[in-house]
Image (tube, rainbow, N blue to C red; front, top):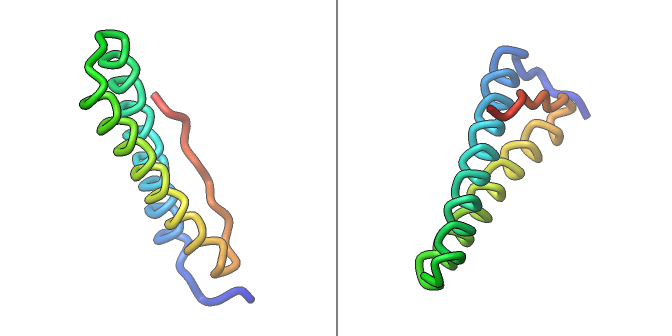
Length: 77
């Protein structure tokens, strides 16, 4: 069921999803770095933070989709 939901808001939320996924990627990369150094505590923490950022992005995506709109992700840089 499509609801009145301004395209400008959808674009801003879609951009936020891209940021959440980008942050997830950074946390995951840092996690791998520290795992290579055998710093398992910080590696585990950063990996969990990566998953949290991914979940944030997915929640926003679900919010948009439930309103009958399309998520438009930007390229990660």
